[in-house]
Length: 534
Image (cartoon, rainbow, N blue to C red; front, top):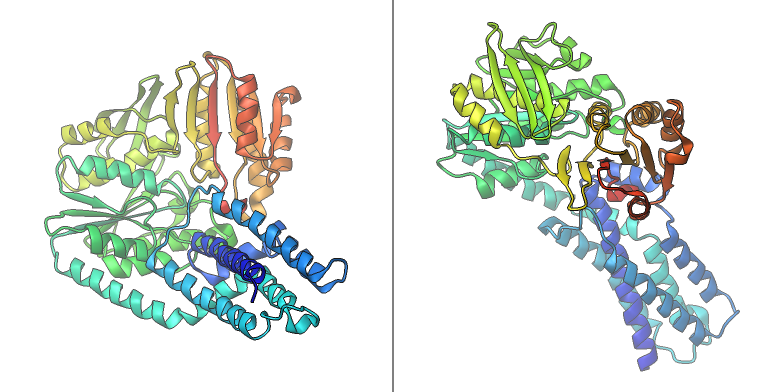
């Protein structure tokens, strides 16, 4: 076999492995779930540009347009060029090479490389390349077909590894369960909701840490395996309180985590139209979130946000139920009132069931943040913390990155960063915050709109457009996913079309901002698209 053919095969083999890596990355972002990964593929990802190029190369190899050697050389050069963007691609959530990813990658590589190598040794060594099916062109064509169908090999690897993963997960589950059982005095607090749960978790952790040795699930470790990893790797014998964030994409997800950690109390921050593509209806969202309440013991308690009608209407009779509200206080036990925003943050009062008013100050802004703080304060009060310690904790809370966090640039521009998982309620509140900056310069909103809203996507994004039109002076709509709905809502508010910009990406939006920004302007970044929507 010549050096020429060896070089061709090596380049093509590397390209095939990088295709697998790219598909495994998207599998990881879809929580390793075949059903979710398949839905992502159905959203136009079966044949992206890279796969279409591979199909074109297969037809080139089958044709007689060029000599076999030239076809092989051209294929290798194209494959080499396509390796570069895969290697250099920037992602918001880079592929994490967990043990599970390594197992999937290994099995998928075996499924593709072994046939490839066998073909090379039995068919790909011919130098004359006279007959297509007995020469290198056939081998490279098969390799390209594997690249086109790399998603199928990844799915096959996941399916083959199911028994292995089940055994490993069961072992980890039992280990975490035994750790928790060995700590009978540990107070476990579950937090779930359509949105606000991560912020509430951080706020509660900061407040409780004033008095208790507290552990929380880090980052977005809100899946069963994320919780298991937290318990196995971070739980200490002296931990007094464990704050467990609980995420859900479908029914039963919250219950699964509750079965593991046995929470004694919890918070339901919101029930709204998030992940409707997997839940199907708002009732399914509500019932899934309330799996936390249903799992609590008779002597426990659940703190429920009554600002959301589906949550307010849901009865809880198996455990104590404390309801709180900011905008709909009529039937709430705890309320936030006297809310005053300033450049330093927010001052507000918590009204208790007996009418007592507790004053608090925070660096946070926005009604959604006050709502999340209120839930954390209630839990701290129920756990017996003195008010002065709670006030101290509230004052120490830092802004959570990408969740309505604010900063000022040296050039005099204020940035409001609300780029994490936009939702109908949070986006409205963020725009109301932006609207308060009307005396400090122009108000600019940069957004791609909201996703995962199923058949309500157009309606809710059009409504978001109305809020932008009322609260912003300049709007930059990113990507074309929600472009029509957003612009229709924005312009319906009498918005000057000269101040409405369209950008294909956030990089292009930044270029627009660099041209139009002035000192004193305020920019709101409302949502960012995950890698699966690129």
